[in-house]
Length: 493
Image (tube, rainbow, N blue to C red):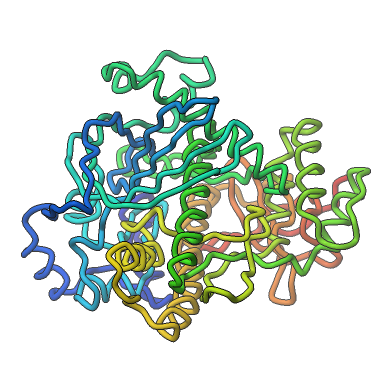
């Protein structure tokens, strides 16, 4: 029997399913999880003096066009003296997903939703994540609200956290909002249909820009790595297109970073332990210094995020076309973030890339388990109850979530490589300009564009290091295994 040709989404979904199992992730929900889910018929109902009614505010969500698992809403109001009060509402997922339930057990195992080129493997059943625990347009939902007073200089001068009822007035998409904010397109119809929302979003944008300026002054890194999205035509893979940053994405990113900082500080002031998100000082700083020297720039010999951000900002202005490649090299050399137990009164690792000391993950509880854990800690602190997790629980969770996040990233990368291998299968012998994205004893990897793809250098890799530019020739692809093999032809200046 002839071997079935791999052409598109169905085959890539099968590859993703197998990769999930191989990495210790559960691609399917168990009968116990589905039985629990089917018993949940409506969103949580709650009342009491501790729960505020904020349904009258102009809340809106901004996410990807096709996103249905909406974790956060935002709204702002001007304050005397040029300050802005920003409210970020996070879906109260814990109201329906109880600790130690079967649903919670599945979420604990995977720790994150896995977004592959062909299929999404949600951390929570879709009846919850895209409906009952999603802050969908027109839906009244319970939320945890992070209230922040953003001073004119961009600092968070005051903050508070509380529970509230919220109502999403408009489900907006990044690209449409970004084009409108940048003045290249009219307001999206959903935005224009809500009186006052345009002024509201411009106020949010102003506050986000102020937050960004402060972070960059402290050394937060301006990086622009390219993410790719698979494009299918009637089920057949047609392309892998870059999904670039824009002003609306940065607005939400700035608010989430600030909200996560507020969460971390709130838990500490209440004497609660937490799961912090940390990125340690880079061990390969010497290579980052060498990359700067190639561009005629000098960095200090000891890690300095402010100096690195100044260098990155300059290179983005001088060579914007190549800046994503430089960003990718720096990201690889910085290393991966991880979760760590934070005990009040003990030193915190902080996050080198964001240039913040107090940082946790708390703004995406439909998609990430550490955020659900943070939500349970917050609700216990708000109610005056003891922590639902011991220090040992959180230390174990930190290690487990770090490992599973890495496994999820490997699944996403493998399926992305399978998709790229599918697009490149007919181009054996073609040559491409590439940048080295990984160099270690286990192998050397490069990234090409057109399509955006990463593969291994199997010949001529001697002497290559992260950030080097090289001409490569495609020598082999294996769609099922996600292998793309190159031979280095020559170094590029």
